[in-house]
Length: 210
Image (tube, rainbow, N blue to C red; front, side, top):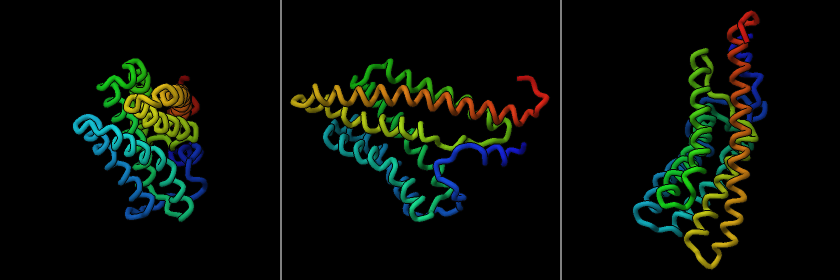
């Protein structure tokens, strides 16, 4: 089995549409905008201490998580750049928020460590895939669901710490979303590891040791 065939058999988030080489498309512009929101959030939250504005930036970044992919499929503007930008924006939002929240004690360091450990595991598997000539595996719907839950949880948790009158309800909702997101994040990570292992076995050939 060739590397191209193996990649084609992996589940894709873009349906049957072949990604093109477009750069200046509406979905890509949305993804670029989401990327710009990361340093803006960090400035508002850590430097300006403008928590309400930071909540707004996080909420916009989270609610637009699915928009770029949906528009890309709707307008037939699926691109290779978009396939890279979308998960990159998701990961940067999550990592930046975790670092900022841990610094201001919105979330405990154990929660941050659990999410970062998953990212380290995936980076290690990606390094192995690159050794055999493969790129990163396509985004899986379980991973997208986990990302959506986490990006929805973060502004709610920030709201809980910034607005005392709704702190109890917001904290309960935010942590429910966060813990479900963490569990699904690891489930998706396990699925990516399984995909990577199958590709490595295919690259080694049928006679390779398991």
